[in-house]
Each structure stands twice: as structure tokens, then as C-alpha cells.
Amino acid sequence: MPTPNQSTRLITSIDTPSLAVQAYLLEMLRGPDVGKSWPMADRISIGKGGDNTVVVIDATVSRNHLEITQTAEGYKVTDLDSTNGTFLDDARVVEAYVRPGMEIRAGEVVFKLRAVHEDITIEPSAQERFGPLVGSSGLMRRMFALLERIAATDATILITGETGTGKGAVARAIHDESGRDDKPFVVVDCGAISQNLIETELFGHEKGAFTGATRQRQGALEVCKGGTLFIDELDDLPLDVQPKLLRALDERTITRVGSHKTINLDLRVVAATKKDLREEIAEGRFREDLYYRLSVVTLTLPPLRDRLEDLPLLANVFLSQSDTCWEDLPRNLKQRLKGHIFPGNVRELRNLLERATYLEGFDQLDPSLFPSEFRGAGAVSTEFKLTANYMKPFKEAKEALIERFEREYLQRLMARNERKVAPAAREAKIDRKYLYMLLAKHELGGSGSS
Image (tube, rainbow, N blue to C red):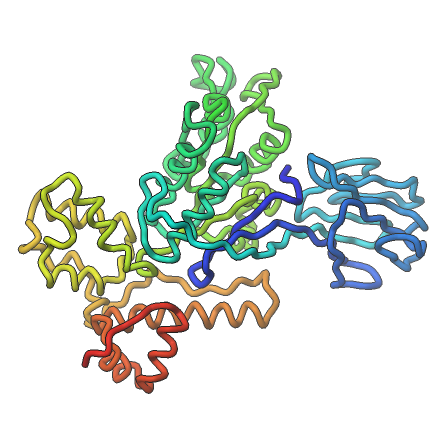
């Protein structure tokens, strides 16, 4: 399992990309100090004796009940010959490793190990490219700076973001810039594989393991030996397969379906999802412990509407096979692109430009390819989903929700008004100076033309 000192990065549509250190808290769920938490250290002792790190005054807790120590493999719980025993998720233990999200019970007092993220600001990269990825915006250059740091490590990475933001391209770029670039890059798309075949796709099977298994087959975890395994559409991974993947990542071993032979693993795992896995956990569709195991480093790719200043660079990449570049495009087309919401993100831009190159031509580009939302005709995309992070304190969750609403509202407002402040202020029925202030706050810019 990941060690407590490994880094985790959470980037959302309202955050600036930064690096965060993954830390752990021990929170009391049941007992005399419900809701109180203690930061984890190299060693924590629990008991009712005054010399313990966590002193618990409860009749069912021994004077020196248990200790939790940090090791290279994670946090280890050791019972100290207590009277009523130490339990991990209702299983009595003498010594065992604890994962984030697991409950630790001492007598009748219950604790939970929780992961938290402590942000460290990261400066933008001087580069406008990372592998095939391009971008001159602050969002992307900070992303590149982070990728430059983590690509060379073996850290497990979770990539999140809307459809079409380039999660697969990021995964491939991480592999190509790592020390495993001469080894296989293997993709398992959970959304494209039948649910009852995902287990054998990952772990492989022996001949005769089930009906139709006419020969031995190596799974993706075994095939990518020494390389990188990219698990796409992670949210489609069946619930019954999730603990098996967790165990494989923890123990770095697998057993093919129908076999008892253990196979050692040497690989790096990168996973991707378009859904918020914290919501999936709350709904019981994803295991909390697997989420923490995969989110050693978490990247959320910004949607294209958050980085429209990257349009010229992206367009030049997609037009590189033709005799056209961004500057050669008709002025009205460039204005339409700058004002478009891009619900399909970078993939939509690529497809639109390639289609124009091969079919219509840029002067005759079909206007129906652009949804009417950016022209203010009343059809607004429902792609954007405004949801709260219910795992944050109330005040932080509320403020984050308001921030995200403001940014999304301003982006759509300015797109409909061709990024002109005066008509945008009139439509929104707010003072022009206040709109300038909001645009500056969210780094969205705008022109003063009427």
C-alpha cells in the first residue's frame, strides 16, 4: 500500500494546479472524544494511561492497548496484549497493516484512518509542451511542472477530467517520460469490456478455468511486466473485482483465474475516470480503500473552456498535416471557436478542425457544428454538473461550490457576448466594474468593447 509520505495532487476546475503531500489523521468515530482527530506520526500509542499519544478514558480500553507504527509498507497496527483486543474492520488482530478508510477498534472505542491532502504551491513550467501535450496557459504549464516531477517516479497516478480532455494522452506521456518507456504500455478500458470478462482481462486465466477458456491467457497485469498499466474508465470496474485489484497492488502479486501459482508484479499503474470517485464511494459503487491506493497522485485535467488561450497552439497541432495554421483561419471562425463552450473539449476541437480540413473547408464550416449555447440562443449545455465536495468542512465546501458556480457562469456569459465586458454586464444585470473584478478574480479576462 502507499506509504504516508507519498505525494497526492488534487486539481479541480476551481483550483490552481499544485502538489499536495498525502498525510493521515486518526479520527475517533465512537468513544469519549467523538470527532476529535490526531495527526499520524512515526509511532502512535493508544490507551488510557497518561503516557500514550492518544489517551482514551474508557473502561473497555487497556492502559496500553495498541500502537500504530509507520513502516515502508504502510501503517502497522500492533495489539499490546490488551484485555478486550484490537480489531480492524471487526476482525481481531495481533499485528496487521491498516489502509485509509479502515476502522480500528480498541475495546468499544472506534477510530478511523483518514487520508488528507496538504497543498504545496508549484511554479509553472517554462515549457509549453509535455510529450504530445501542448498549452501556454497557466493551468497547463503548472500541470506540466507537476508531470515533470512525477513522471520519473513510480508513483501510482489517478487522472480525472471530463470526456475529451486528454486523459489517455496524459497517461501515455507519463509512460514515455518515465524510466519504463522501453517496456510495454498496456491499456485496459473497463468501459469497453464485458463486466464478466474484466477479471480475466486484468489477471489472466488458466486453460479450463471456466467454460470457453480453451487456452491459458496472460492478464494485463502480467503482460505489462516492467512497464505501465493504464486502467481507463476506472469507475466501470465491477465492485467484486475491486478488492482483488487492491490486493494485487498492495502485495505486488497476482494469481491467474483457475490457478494457485503466485506471479510477482513489476509495473506502474495509471488509472483514469470521468466521474468523481468520492461521489461513487458515497453511493457504494467504489471502494474507499482502492481509491486511496490509486490516488497517490491525482490529476484533474482542466476542460478546454478553462484554457481557451491555448486554442492557437492546439489548432496548430491538429492542422500540422495540412497547409493551414491558426493564423490562416477565417477571422469569423476564430471568433466562433473562442466563444464556444466545447462540451467535447480538446477531442471536439480536433474533430471539428479535421472534418473541415477533409470535407467542408474552413470558409464553409457548417454552423450546426457549434451548439447554440455560445450564441445565446437559449440552448444551454447540461454537460457541466455543479456538485459539492461533501467530504470537506461545511464552510470550505460552500465556498468551493460558490467559486465554481461563479467561474462557470462567467465563462458562459463571456462566451455568449464574444468576451466583451459591456454587453456581458448588461445581460448579467451587474455593474461593469464588478464584472471586471470577477473576471480578474477568476483570471478570465475580457475586452471593454461595447
